[in-house]
Image 1: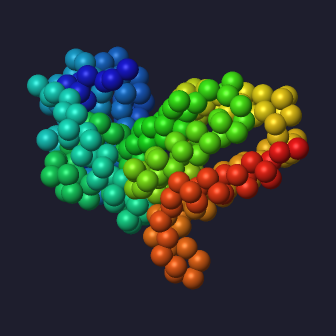
Image 2 (image 1 turned 180 degrees about the horizontal axis):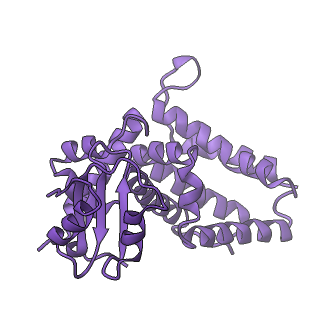
Length: 75
Length: 198
């Protein structure tokens, strides 16, 4: 099934590495409104990709910032 | 509101194939690809999670196109000689029409992505089943001698791929200019059939 492109949100971050035991990993994995997420650690911009029907980009930015990371939308 | 742009997707696929064939996986990056396509890197990430996801999705598309092309006008119920000849024609047509896709597919095949792609959809096992049935029929009808699968495959398709490689390079042994013709292909095919017969 093709994904609705409007539910995909892309961000430039400074999340170099993410420990599967850390709080942010747990939060992203268990967030009811997040269907899918991934971070491209190979990329210089550590691109975070979030698929969510209901979350707005600024809400995702706030969520990531709360864990002490920089995050801004890549358009 | 984002709308799926098929032309843009095609441009991304074509450029990714170009860059990977030219520079390999190591020299390939999402940023470079976005630049070549004149799109933002963000747009690229909307379609693909990361470099590996992109390689595997494009690889699966190319592999499906290739396998579908090999079974055009083909049925496993055909006589061995007729069926194998159609396979030769189909494989040769695809290679001549899409040399870059074939070069890309070769790179993928020899990488860890190969297996991931082949396991990504059951469609590939459907192709394997069709070929298995074709070979089983040929054995049952005593059109070919029983032999190890790999030995069979090497004899049945090896000559064709050697000729296609010469053709793609535009030269054969010792740099001799070469263009594959139907006559040469048929000549190699007859020898192949002879070699496989009981």
